[in-house]
Length: 581
Image (cartoon, rainbow, N blue to C red):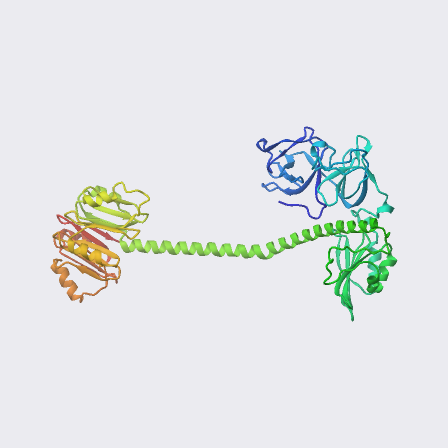
């Protein structure tokens, strides 16, 4: 959302649509957000406190690609909106608003006047029907606008409400003569109380250096060094004749003082001797409880009445408002410069670096995943019952394979699983129809005679195993790496992730001799057993040993190449499953 800070606010628009307009409850041209009873006819003026460009590449002055906008928020605290264009048809135009100070008296005998939320005479636009300015009341206005018919509307200072100078040909506000209230509109530098060129000449004559000029704020600033006062500064508000001087007071210390200059001669005295200022008018002091509450007025330049002081105070309020608006605009420009020049490049660079790191991390994760798949074995060969089911289910994403020859089960990286017919009944019951919100399996082993072991991702395990293995699993706190079931029901071998292991006394003799030759080292990765004395052992360094296998299986291994082997498991009747890469 934007507000054209360099222009007086609120902004004012006139409805140009012949059919009139109906306000919306959102910045949208759609009929579904029409505000009931909030209609404006052609020629009506509306006050706007914010302008929202179209979301489709629009600006504060032009509609977007779809021809709608900019959207105008009404200055009525109701959250209502209008729009300058609809489908590329202009429906409203901006009207020039004057900022200044004007004094009026209410001229509506017996009734008074009520504020409107818009520059209009419409009774339905009253801010508060119960609040009236009585006849002959003095009001001060800080904004002035004229409609196409020549009627004048003014915003009452200190409010968001509007009044009108005439209605139905009758005067409702009487202008107080300029000489009485001292008010001069401040919308044009051509009518400056202190001509800019002459101000600069006087400043140069007395050694002052120009340090600031702001057409928006209508101010020229000069500085000069002084041995006694240090750096002095004079701000000349050339349209109003107000002059502010900043210097060190011998008693009060640093302070800022103001006076109004009705002539260049007054200004020349200040440039010549800035301290001439301290003898005339109000000044701000440190530790003064009224500092900031009492407004500076040069009593030698204006009438001594309370009305004259009020005039000056109100004029300064207008000037400060305009200066604040200009400062806000400069602040917005500076903030944009900082954002575009410094912050956005840093954010862009940070996003680019974050994207690079994310891509690098993703690539590293993919490389790690591919390495794991290679280590597990990307390809397979087997001799199994129900071989068609097994062939269709295998892929490199399989993290675990277990078989007993009759049944085969596979677990996948995504937590899914697949199995063929003949699975041990207890294991089948654990997996069949398992709810998706239950923990997924992460490791499984199966044997003949309904033996199985399964571990889930939440760390829990379940099994149907010999008593010796069950006792071992119940007492240990180690994490299981592999479980193997051998030739008879009570033959088993368990390996833990730290490389340690335990086994029954009835393991195959070839495996028992191998363990003795390796001095029973705790460096195992996994062990599998078969129902006919087969065994496969893999150490953590990748070395592998096997034995008790059939001649057919041996020929298969030789055909694959021993250096490509990654895993093997065994089933009844000389069946097997081999993974390799």
